[in-house]
Length: 363
Image (cartoon, one colour):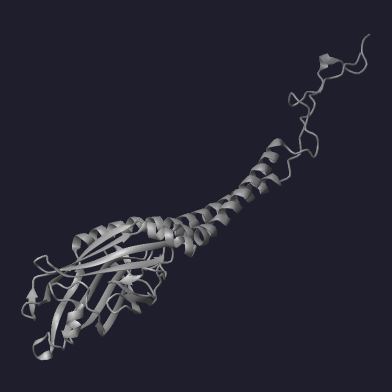
């Protein structure tokens, strides 16, 4: 009697049908599509962050307050009692910038863009602490580009002005080129020249210079001596002249000066106020930022620089590299999924043994 030998299966389930993909292939396919979508998203986000988000997010806050102390050591100062120039140990200049939020909001409604209104004051004090001059300014500019905005209230020492170019601050991402800079004394704008890249307190900065030649300028509204007014001096035929060499070290990412100096000279010329109708030095000195204010300015600019770089360099390049990495991973998974599956190999049936029955049989 013949007995059949049962065929052994290689697994508990039925053998895979020819041409059917394994579940792992479908999972890799879905994963590669998800990674491809993420790669496209981050790659597209990179230029949007740099060219769309940054110009709209980076701006000067309207309520900013800032002060700065500069000194000329030593200096030459006019003694109004004797009308002679005297050598003094120092002259101090205190500059303050205060944002007017209410004025900014009011002007923004008509201008249709973000506006900053700064009320500035340049207060000059002699070695005894008494006032030499105090010149207020109102400066209006675009919060993003730092371009001047012309509106009612723009002035220097009470005189209406129309600024052209920058003042106090350079634009974000300052370029290696000349800019137009507004001079408050002459109420005019002139080029300020890029003179090269330097290192200042560990920061890479752009160095700018501007020279204002001898120019006749208005007398300050506030005079240091009681009874003397700009009108009375003008009636005597005396005029005020001014020249300066202005120097700035500007951190280019933020556009903020980290150091500023001026070689400054003022003279009174002619008229009955001066003996013999000649000229006399009203003020002369090399004005420099005080060391402690340089330190605090560098620290502040360094922290702001990191925020600007985050929007202009770190995030855009990070998103671009992340998109490239996700794209490479997506292509790798897609290539793995397209490889042909190996053919299923069935094990051979075991040979029949003698005890299981052979052909023929029995007596």
